[in-house]
Length: 409
Image (cartoon, rainbow, N blue to C red; front, side, top):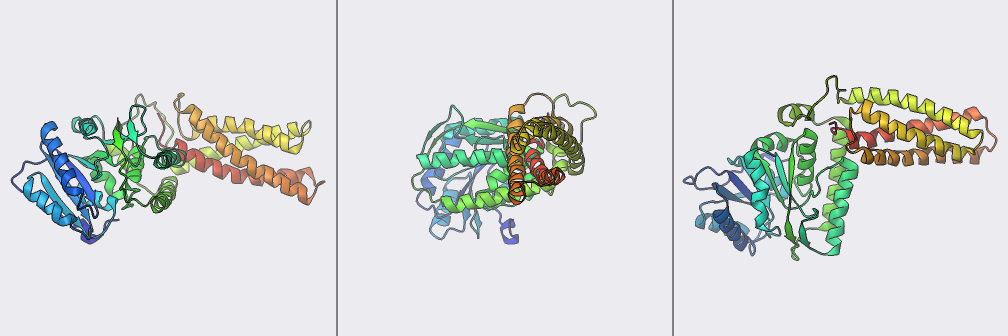
C-alpha cells in the first residue's frame, strides 16, 4: 500500500496551462539517459496528434542518478510536463500516486523506453474519452499485433497470461504490456483496493476491473523489445505468483467489496432475467452442496452398478466422468446462474480439470486401501471413496468458482 509520505506527494506543474483531458504518466527509476529523448518524442507526438489538452507526468521512483534533474529540466522547457518524486521504488506505487493526484479525466501510462508505437495512443484513450469503455490496454498477443522480442520473453509472456486465465479467470489478453489507460472516476474507486506496488499492480487492477463488470478495451500494438530492460525476470515472476495467490484468496473468500463497486460502476448484463440466483458466497455454497449431494448419490449408484461388471478402478473412472460432466452443467446453471452457451466449453474443461483432481484423490485412496487390505468389506471401500470425494468436492468448488464467478450473462 502507499505510505503516508508517498500519498502526500504532489506533482510540480505550471499553473498557467489548461486542465488536461489526458495525463500520461511515465514511471522511471535511474533513467537519466533515456528520459529526455523519450519524453520529448512523446510530447511532440501528443502536440501534433491529440486534439485535447494533455499533461505528461514524470514519476521518479527513488532514482539515485540524474533522472530527477533531467525531469525538472524537461518541466522547465515544456509547459505540459510535470514531475512527481517518490522516495521508494515500484511502478505500481508511482502510478497510484500520480493517478490519484491528477486532475485529468483520463489517465494513462507508458514505459519510458517507448517500446510501444505511439500510433496506438489515440486508439487507446479515445474509447475512454468518449465514455464507451472504462479501461484500455495495449496487447502484444492479438493476431494483428506486430512484436519484436526474443523467444524467452515471448514464452514467459504467453505463459503468464495463460496462468492468469487458469487461476483468476482473466479474460483480457495481455496483463503486463506497459501501455494502459483508465478513466479517473474508475481509478478513484479501484485504486484503494489495489495492494501491489510493483509489477503485479497492472494485473491486480485489471482483474478487479473485470470482476467489477467494467469494459476493458484492447488495442493491438506494434512493440519492440528493449534489449537494455532492467527487469529482474525471476524476482518479478515470484512476486507475480505471490500476487496471484493473494488475489485469488481474496476473491474466493469475498474479502473485496466488489458487489458495491458493481452496483456503482459495473455494466449490467443485457436482458437480465428476473429471479436470477444471487452471487453471495453463502448462497453459492448452499447450492453447490445440494448439487454435490445429488452428484455423490449418482456417483455411488453408478459405481456400485459398474463394480458388478468392472474392476474398482474402472468403475470409479466411469462413475466420476459421467457425474463430473453433469455436475459442471448443474453448477453452471444452478450455483453460478450462468445461462446460454457462452464459455460452455471452457467451463467444462475446467470441470474436467477438477475431475482429474478428484480421480487422483479417489484412485489413490482406493490404491492405498487395497494395498492395506485386499479383501476388505465393501462398506469400508465406500466410506473411503466418500471421504475422498468430499476432498475432491472442495477442490471442485474452488476451481469452478474462480472460473465462473462474475461470468453470469
